[in-house]
Length: 333
Image (cartoon, rainbow, N blue to C red; front, side, top):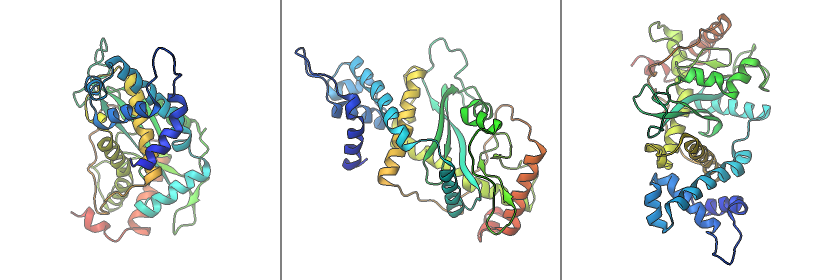
């Protein structure tokens, strides 16, 4: 974050972080409160370490960090992570086609485990299949590596499919209550097709959520579809990587109550969007990079026939109507 971005951020949160001066003592300034919080997020240092760095009480540092994280989400979320309108969905889909060659794509969905020290009296609720304790960050990302929607706080023992189904976005998608753009033709085609999200094989297949074909059944069309979907879906993996490398608190096992960990993760996500909106960002990506499909843990919902047919249409389109020049070389490796 450069100085100009910091000044803008301070101006946005200054009112909420300013406390009244009394005869007893002067309050900690909004600038210092914001600095402490950004230091905590960027370094992953404990409250004890920050207590020595800023010469404040440990409980004071803890209260400052939690309060400031809440203020950051409150002030920045309406500006930098508001739910997309129909026009914004169309812009996101256009960017996915231009940058990742996937038509009518509204975003990439994935979950990330946020490591925690075992919460007291929690049993195995937070213990995930990777053999550590965590809460899950479920996110939807646009083509510019920005979060458009997040759901944070589910038990680490839950799988991605069930978490997404129970999220507000998942339930609204299932009930048809999201104001999505009307179907439009894919480039070079005439038949209107619905808009969809892309996800890995841990999610259930539906009209609005595309997942890859199983690796057990392969042919030219399916391989082409899996390659294009992986190119679009890797955006969310890259976004998680960009955020965690900037906010190192996500690299460590946070010694926080799960409710406080949720506040920290929400602050990191909204600051990620804020910095990208203010400063932009260059991501060095290779068009021939393909990430392997991940192993699925847990039960995945069965797909309906209409969703299977829609995926087959996508596969035919990528293999016959809209292949990229390097596609065969990468698939045949």
